[in-house]
Image (cartoon, rainbow over all chains, first blue to last red):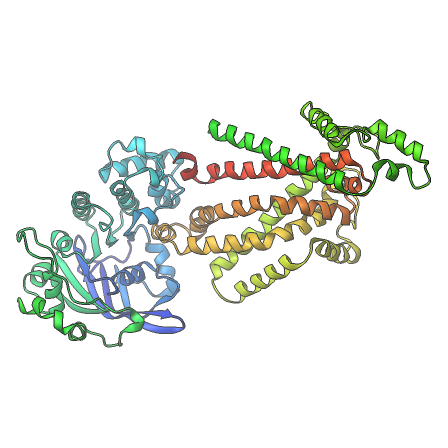
Length: 311
Length: 311
């Protein structure tokens, strides 16, 4: 990528604001969110459903849904302003610069195209690969992401593969152009725990091998602690806490982070009742613009004692 | 696949038998005597009776039905009362014209609908959407003969782009004179086709697999064609198949309006002249066309959607 210089962060997001319009009214779904991702670093963007984490990810890809738009802030990838040039910069960096792994491979893979084609169509178009070259490259990539006997599966359709295999196909497709930054939108949610661990190991390997940055969106702190070295915690569209994973997870400063941690089931405390955070994040249209976690706790005061006072 | 075909073909035979029987009953229940219609009001009663005996119309209905069915099974469609020639040769003359007309109508319907639906789906809600909806409602609500007459007035009488009627002598003239009739039939199908295509294309465009296609850095045109339209057009095939009846009915009316010597005008002449064998044979052929179109529709799913083919 041109313009890459040492010392400059791979991705620098500053003051990102995303508005969502619902029935003609605009709501601020992301407010003043800033974070950076370095090369060869996995950064976790953590939050519950409704925190805006997926919107943040999609805004960096220029793939926001039609009712959402970036209303403020900037995002620099290798020094290139992603939001400038009327969105045309995205076309240049998608695939080779930034790629994305989606949450549900069952719906994110084209149901009527062969998986091999889907892995290589991006790079084949860019480099003008022949059909045969593309097929060989697809087999190579499928082997790389741990799909057994790729030569037998390269011509399969997504519905013929298991969920874990489909997610590997998606990962193979997203790294086929050797991107510098991989955006992951809860890619292990649809997978069972053993496959989840394998996929995480795969990401960690890719990070080290490709020297790629990873921006990993999830609600699962266990996943974050395994993969990420730095973390940003989002709540209701705002950044509540960020720092190194060890710092944030080991010594959370914010009530919300603490509550999230307490709500994570632990294998070393068998027999413990599952604890949850009282209430949910209200939908965009149902919450005040300055909505905070303290307000949610206040709303659910009777049942919220336990989780906050245990610490 | 073989079992599917056998089942469908036996169903086809059953449907054709039902249509043939219903036509037989209707034709014989309709007032009017073919012999009287052929010989005219001034012919003597004895001459009429002689002709009735020659055509077998003096026999009991059950016997006539039995003769008709056994002849049909042995491939004998009978002889036309009016034209005094075997119906098989009449059909051989007329059928290709109607098939060409229907084929052109389907082609025009697709050529008009697909770009229109794609344009509206890409543009989203707004002027284009409303415009196409209004056009659809008007086209849907206007009777075929009126559309045909309007097209004749504008493109035939005023602009002289196409002949007002008739079929010409050479192949080029045939094609040229079928353009307006085919567009007339197509406009009867277009509204439903556009509506269904627009809905499925809109869904496809908002799907994760289209976002995934973009995330790989594919050209927007490639994503539109290979990801959105290929998935979104499958529903259009269903609509086209369902409209086979409309197509056949359209051919009937349009051939009359444009004086095209096809199956439709043959059938109408048969009905007006109480030409039982012609009415029965043409109904049989139209029913056959519709049933075959249904069969082809089902088979084309297998072509378009690997899930229907392999699952």
